[in-house]
Image 1 (spheres, helix red, strand yellow):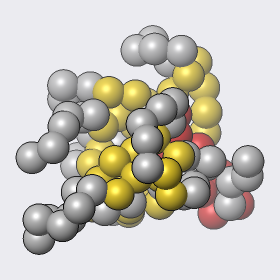
Image 2: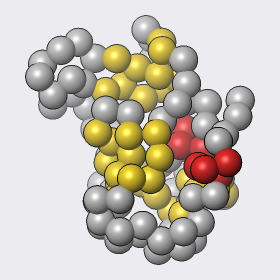
Image 3: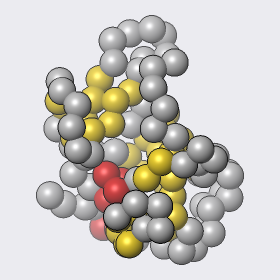
Image 4: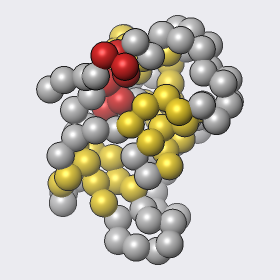
Length: 108
């Protein structure tokens, strides 16, 4: 389990007030700015740290088991980030030290 120095310079793992561990900004992010890419092996079953994405063209879902810092993302009903396939982008400005959250949601 590793993390690229590029991603480690941008985010960190820390204790979350939401749940257990979380992913926190080391640098400020502007709306629309790429935060990082969810990396890990492709998997066919759900489990801990698995991210499912759905092809916007209606293709089959695919999933990865997270092996980098983005596996620590927690859910929020008002997330400050969102995935476009496996790339994570800021939905709004994110301040240094702020927990980065996504909406776990479901299939569209």
